[in-house]
Length: 123
Image 1: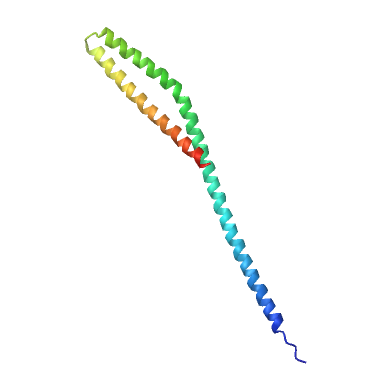
Image 2: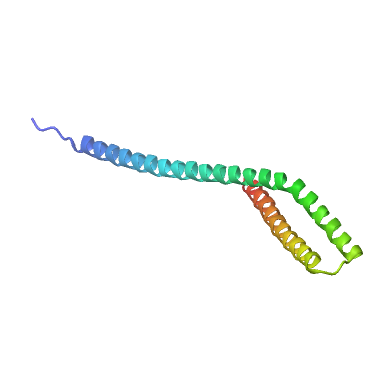
């Protein structure tokens, strides 16, 4: 007795190809999901850093304003009183240095705020 199993073999081969295609699709989709998960984790980390920078910037704002106003008042007094001497010149230089430092801190604060805005836009 001779039984033709050609149709069965073709069906098995077709099933095998379908299984392989399905496995490839599953691997591809899994890779896509892993990539998306990693991207979202990084976005969350950047967002957290941005929020931290924004909080630091807000915390720096008030003391910077008070310091800047105090320096302006002191410089104004020095200009009005204008006493000659090394002490007054040293005081002027010191106030100029503090003012420059405050300006640099203010620039960093603005950069932190801009960074936060950019991170908010990414979300």
